[in-house]
Length: 225
Length: 235
Image (cartoon, each protein chain N blue to C red):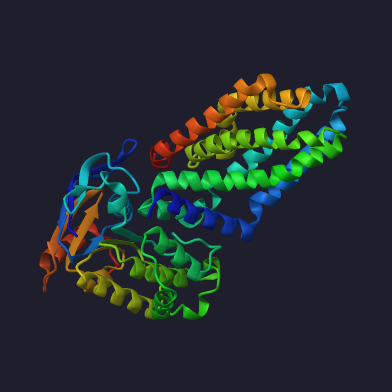
């Protein structure tokens, strides 16, 4: 069975389990929404500061919400030692990485599709026409988060204080992605296009491709050690 | 399938769970793996399953080291651990469908139903595995490994959760599995049951292989080793 077929099978299993448990998606959705309301009451965002503040606030919300999802990413495998069942099988470990990254990406995107428009409404932002560009940047940033997040979730999987350890390992590694995403979003909000931010955009794409490839190659070692 | 273990050792920190273990098993051998708690039985099964790496030594299946060409070799190894390795929120049938697809041995709906019928779970095919009792989960695992048909089947204390019918079912499955030329290694504290089935017995004690002989009747060497290394009350 090819790598992609195996990844599809695992992704189908994860989506089916999530559909039945609804643990991760509901928690992430409510936490993300809650954070937006907290930001709404805490910040009085003047219209001229929107471009600087909005991307950072949005990404804070995504980062915290995504970390909640990552902490649950291998929960189904922890129950009944199902990870051993997967490791015992002839499964390519790269497929497990792709499936978990894909699953996490689907959850994150589902949350973002609700959170971004809600953010616009709560902060009374008018630039609705820029949402497609912002979604594109968010997608690239989210891929980077999910790729790196899946690797770190696997590294901390057997750690006793994994919920504490996960953000401590992940957040410093995420700095290039967060910086690039925020700069791109800021430029889009200020100028209506990517303009000077194309270098940041290229960095984001490069980061995603490099870490996705590294993840497929090293996941064997990460998950078994 | 032929299994060869050379000078195998496993340490957890400073503690040696297994030391200097050599073993050669031919196709169709049924081995009872015996020993008191902490003897190293589960560690040996994990090493043979490739779930943990040895500190020293090598495991070969048909002359190929377990580490090399891992994916293909792993498909030849099964580990039946009662109540484990099943997804609670997949149905009984979905679990079988998932694992057969994972091992690239997709089974038709009829084959799945027949496997469930044999272990008495046909009526519960649509129920979540999490709703099954430990014994029923063990029956589901039997159905799973019957469908996957591994060349080397490892069992870790399967008797504890099974009722009388379940034990008969398991033993029939294991006999048939061996008859097809596959190797079975059964780790258990139920010495009488294990001895009834096996063609060879191994006794581990404090991480060392203390006894390794083909079954005989009578078997004075085993009786002696049993007295020396196994706690009383099992036979």
